[in-house]
Image (cartoon, rainbow, N blue to C red; front, side):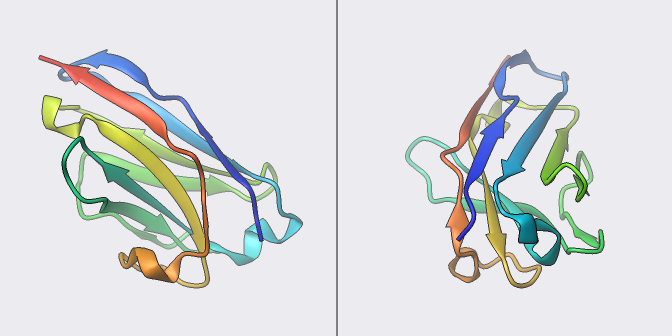
Length: 118
């Protein structure tokens, strides 16, 4: 099991940027794929991005970039050109493989709020 703690959320104007961080407790962090998900009010949680242990990424939205620093046990999510509809709680998760299916992830953080004003 790995403990995950997200940070970096906040209030930003439309068009702005934020960088989210997710710090992991496990020494085996470098063995895990890491995913980012988000959940907006009244909506289901949705996939945002994922990164493999060696840095391969899967990020459908070109405004966002996922990266990791295995020496720091940290994964990042860079959010650019933010829109009000990006407002959500953003969660990181650890799993065995890069996938958009949240059921494949076995550890989750508590989330960090991102609010984008128009």
